[in-house]
Length: 110
Image (cartoon, rainbow, N blue to C red; front, top):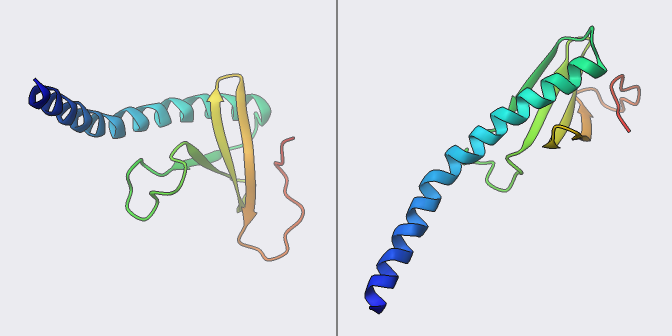
């Protein structure tokens, strides 16, 4: 009986880790759609590029896979990061620039 439980546990564990990357990447795709809608409402005349890092990408294991990176066409030297908790709770979590000492970010959100 114990052997059967161990085998079922190992199979369940394996299935979980085979399915999880697909589930996370599907969730990220949904988050991108929600973020696009949010940015369209907040910045209607802006063109944006949204990037994400697929779950399980080598070198990014310690990074939150739900982090989305946004670059605005009118501010190509700056990158903003967002986390989508749900369609009503979209948070801008940080910003950065390739310019040293940049302080005049145009798309900061509270």
